[in-house]
Length: 283
Image (cartoon, rainbow, N blue to C red; front, side, top):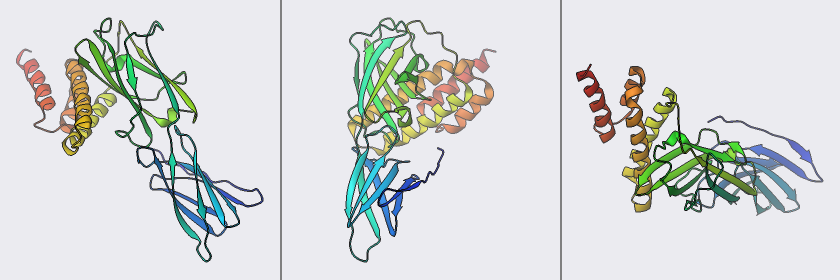
């Protein structure tokens, strides 16, 4: 994740300073005063790379904060004699989000459902949604056959999980909040391909999937929330299903890298090794 800093100073009948945060926190200053600002969202997750301004008037400082994919927020700090360093917390709320689920012929998919009200499973720079749509007409779908548009632009490297449940496809989609370029309203389009002819995922993507699989295994072992366990198990099932389907066409070097990442005794590792052993026996 790239880190950057941006500072600008202007005088509007008072001292105003601008700053961009590193992940550890947002540090602002105005004249002789400094402010350590903790920026969190409504799920109490730290928000990285927030930007802030401080306006000092008399004995009051107003701290304005904004970050990609959030509504702006502010907090007041009352200044005391002989105190120049202060701590403050600012909460940033989610913008309004609209989601449409359609096929690649631009037709809405009937009986689809999407929920994005809970963001507790995601980091502060992520936005996630979960839902389902009928599997009829989309029987050959894979995680690479869902396109995600945010405000008419393709999301950059979204994480997509897809599992079959009866007559429905269940999905989870995670995008970076930097793709949400409006702090007020953002429109998502989830596009499912009816007759997908997708290229196999490149090696780097497969390796990233394996790393994600390991991270979700660890998270599932640590959480006690039944809802989180279900979500994490769906992620594991989705990733395993895709890696197993693509394994026969995966080159030997990529296979070795993936096997090296996965826990030795995991069910996925054993299944992938079994495919390789079967191929070796029938050459």
